[in-house]
Amino acid sequence: MDFSLSSEQQEIQNLARDFTRAEIAPAQLKMDADHKFPYELWRKWSDLGMAGMLIPEKYGGSGIDPLTYILALEEVATESNTFALIWQVHVLVSEMFRKFASAEQKDHWLPLYSKGEKLAAFALTEAGAGSDSYGMTTKAELEGNQWTVNGTKIFISNAGTDISDGTVLMAVTGMRDDGKKEISSFIIPQDADGFTLGQSFKKMAWHGMDNRELVFEDCRIPAANIMGERGAGLRQALGGLNLGRIAFGAIATGLSRGCLEESLAYTKQREQFGQPLSSFQLTQAKLSNMACGLEASRRLTHYAAYLFSNDMECRKEAAMAKLFASQRSTEAAMDAFQLHGGSAFMEDTKANRFYREAKILEIGEGTNEIQQLYIAREMGC
Image (cartoon, rainbow, N blue to C red; front, top):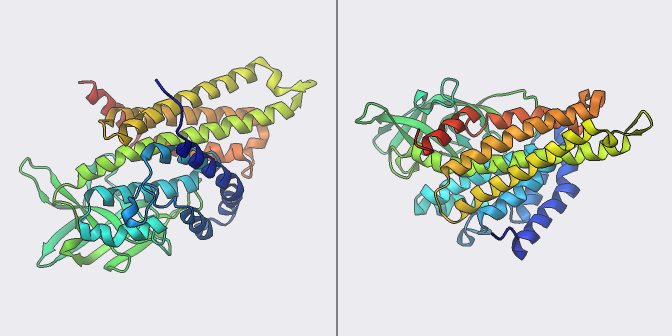
């Protein structure tokens, strides 16, 4: 089996690494301090073609394969989970447009997303509907040539910035023959009548990412703003979430790598009892476990991305990558905190930030418990 990367993949990986170290790392410090969306950083990243990495060239994108995107995403996440997740949501929604939108919808939105002029968002979660998508209460009713939307979404990322537009919304549009709710996808322009931005949330990490409530009160959108066929919303969401789960595997791998690199550097220079911390066997055990978890997470994520890139079935592998990599990143963050001792308790240290960022990766893009159920189902349980 060939694990080597193509020259193009290496070039983009190096580009992402260099940009991350030069631009994203200092921007992360600024985001931690002012909690503001990094508009200038997003513009520079988009100018490199990264906002439209998976969007076909006919729409102004780079048309690069998902595995290469995953390679670049790990590089970003090593220094900034915040920016990695801003980008990840944008790419995921852009992919939904590419796969499910009408020709007219693609022609309008994909060029804007490919240039980074507009930022994409995905509105699924509600206060009573997270893992239980059928608990959704946001409704859309067709009245003549318009849909009227009522409901509230919560914890929605990327939807409230100055450049946010075209949010993909999941809403109930009726009942199916089997008694379950019919759920459809809609495109919501930022200036839609009846759509307002709700409260923004104080988070323990991801301070530069916009994350908020969305409120729909008799929000009216054209009938043509439905994405794909009526009732296909959950199928579309699950198709997008395969890539999202693989991306979370890459982000978690990046976090694990950041923990290892920071811990290795710190324990080599920090001395106790006259010798570097790295010379003690208990320290070496933690560092070795981090390295093993990192490499295994990377390989599992790359395999899932390979399957996705080649249009092969990967629901189980995507769930495995997300489950395993996020578990390992939480462990790596805890070990990095322990190795840094009291200094990790200070908010301005990387070890502290890694610790605050890690746990949410076990929850976002479907909780790890849900991933376990998916994996078991794929095994015939």
